[in-house]
Image 1: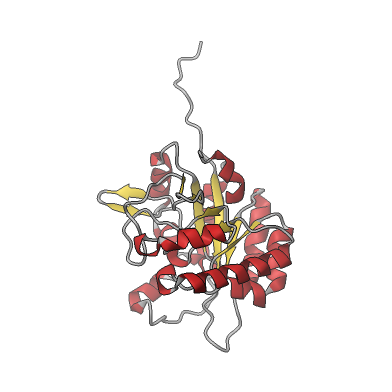
Image 2 (image 1 turned 180 degrees about the horizontal axis):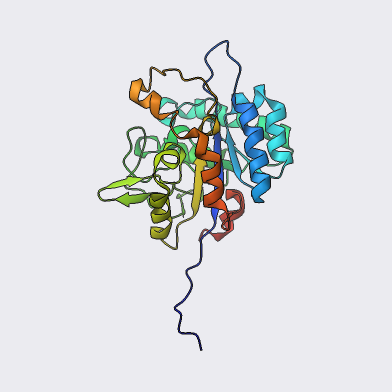
Length: 273
């Protein structure tokens, strides 16, 4: 008889990507070619993910948007423009959501269930947006970073999936605490920069009621993009935007291999009522 202890189940991780682009005026959009490369890599892993796409980018690049849906991935809306919620008002958000849903549904032929606020900007001052998002017909949101952040974060938010009072499901960004600091270790810059051992530490610390998902952006996979300073990020922030891009695709593959999760829409049924 074996005396080994119980085997810890490796919780599934959903791949998500925020499809946005920062090409300066007059320069070609780089996101489209990167998205096709990401789609090929996901095929190799047997993974289907959730692509949150900025509405105006979906409209201007319909072939890219349609390809995402045609290859079995979920399309979600990442706002009409990449503007944080506190900079909008309810009528503007409603119009943006309605327009974005129509574009995505017309291109994919499928209903749109998920919304992710730009920069995880669903914070206490923009909680009014929960009602607007729910009224627009979304089933779930993935818009809360339950930690302090230099941009937008809400350290008072739960770290497990929950329902807002109107029934809208929220999938908060996975975070892990390193001392007094909580980091979104499965996302973007952190995923590029953190030692893989710390990412694995975060996965080992994840509570059983968390829903694990990683998030990326097309630029995270784009080492060939010429460096340029982005004034809104400063010199250091601009440099950070380019570090680790060449290893991003390999890193994502190592993390997902053997624990690929379904698109977020398909994980909604597991969230308690």
